[in-house]
Length: 250
Ligand code: MF3
Ligand code: CO
Image (cartoon, rainbow, N blue to C red; front, side, top):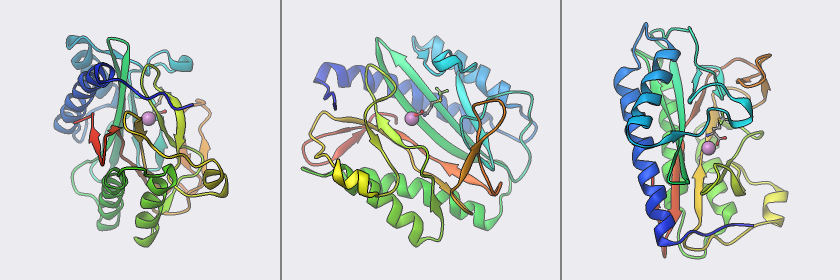
């Protein structure tokens, strides 16, 4: 069941979202060649805590860190550690923050130094797909229209969308109904929902240069593409309004 939020609840999610957005801006400034993913984790964790936020990933089903850092063929849920960033890498940074009991969640993919033209296009198409999905949120919009906006644009550009992981409703908990797939399926059309004002969603296209099949590394978290080709990820938390949507993580 979709839990729609009151103005007061949205205000708290907006505050959580401001902290998320500020943390991701910090990541953009400090993610450089030679920097470890642990360093990013520690700096962003500090940033969030200094602003009264709680990093919600830490401890979620035993997840050990405050952010996810997913490099190149890693799709999502990369665990920060000693690995250093190299020229030509792309790194997805994903962070969720709780503020006065409400959660916001967002992610960006950051290029490190010079990246190849095709990987640059992958990253740009992923970010654009997210913005097209947000623009698709008009009055009486169906959930499947959001998914279709992402899938059509990504596939038109020659890339593929991940099937095994989706966006989600968000609010008091990081994961609420509905699931927000990045592709249209029969199951989605059969259970389609009209998204009413006050609905809060984390929309998160995860897209690939090669095939969209994934596997999980032995650390039980890190999702990688089976073909080990690169993948990009962008995410915003949004609230559906009367005839559009507001991004809460900016
Ligand atoms: N943005 C991710 C999600 O929506 C983050 C979860 S990572 C975890 O599921 F570590 F918290 F699991
Ligand atoms: Co999310």
